[in-house]
Image (cartoon, rainbow, N blue to C red; front, side, top):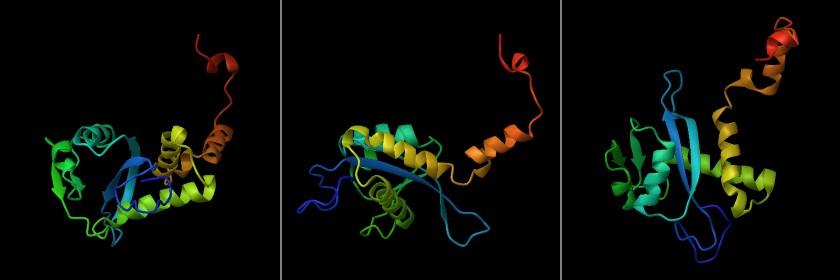
Length: 163
C-alpha cells in the first residue's frame, strides 16, 4: 500500500491508499552468504482479486519462474498453471528482501518526492524500478555513454545517418 498512514486501516485495508503489486527476483550468488534482490517491478492494481493479481503477475513474472507468495487466498487462483510455493508471511518475517525493497521504495518517495499523486504513481514506480534494475550497469550510465562516444573513432555525419 502506498499513500500514507490512516488510522484504523492496517495491513491490506486500504482506505485512500493505492494498492501495489510488487515482485522481486531473488538470486543466490555463490560469492555471497545471503540471497540478494536481482531485479524488481511494481504495478498498481485496482483490487486484490485473483484476476487482478494474475494480470499483474503475468506482466511482471516469466512463465518459467518459481513464484513464492504468502497465504493470501487469491494467489492460489492467480498462479494456476505456474510453479508456486506458499509460505505464511509471519508478519513479513518470511519475506525480508521483499519488505526491504518496499521500505526502500517508500523511503525514495518520501525522501525525493515527499509525496506522489495517484494519477502519476505508476510512472514513479517505473522510474524507481528502472533505476533499481540498472544499478549494477555503470557502463550504461550517462558518463559511460559519453566515455564511449569520446573514445570511438570519428564518423562523418553522412555515414552516421541512414538514407
